[in-house]
Length: 249
Ligand code: SF4
Ligand code: SF4
Image 1: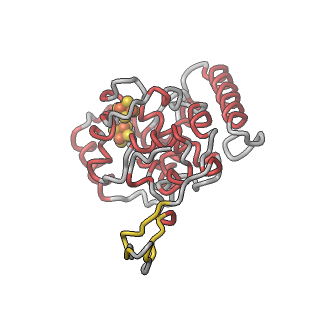
Image 2: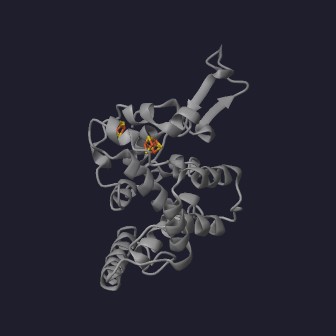
Image 3: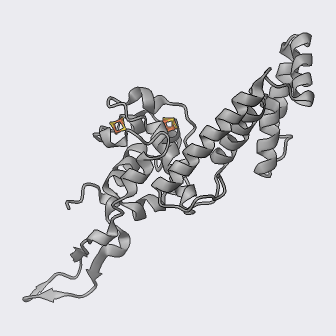
């Protein structure tokens, strides 16, 4: 298979000889650099299918590597190592080992969807980032990342009440991730709310924070949503060849 990107050459596969003479010609150092070939077992043939089986990953096979997603990406502008196009490339080729080198930054996608709008092939790169992060966690290759914990807290509140109460979501997320509730940015945000929001709205927000109101007649909807989510999670685990159960089941 041809090598398309320099970054795909594994450092351990580069072989040089400090001192090497071939047929009387001194090819020491960089002149004697060899790249050890990859073999079939270096690839995970199931990687694309497994990530495509998770929500958001369905259309990754459409990618034609134009790079518009990376070019538009909010996180890439801050950290050039965050590269959706490159990761989609690795997934499509089954290059799991290379993907794992970036396993601790893939979750940092902020779901701004700039890539989604830039993509000419409707790949939904944001979804692929989420599916890839999800795959890493389901396979036990990374610990649970903050974005996943936030999704859980958010979803659980919707399942339980049919409503979103931002203050409660934040409190629970901070508790799960061991963060202090009194962060400078949050204190500044609350102060600005207190100054600007009408008193009636503030009181309603406070009431919702304390009494956790539910959507009327929500119990049946909640049960149906939970059943659906449990079915989807069981399907995902089957698609990845994982036993039933697990932390999300
Ligand atoms: S949704 Fe994620 S991958 Fe897409 S542009 Fe935003 S940060 Fe980048
Ligand atoms: S913008 Fe779409 S087609 Fe282009 S590299 Fe990104 S995912 Fe692939």
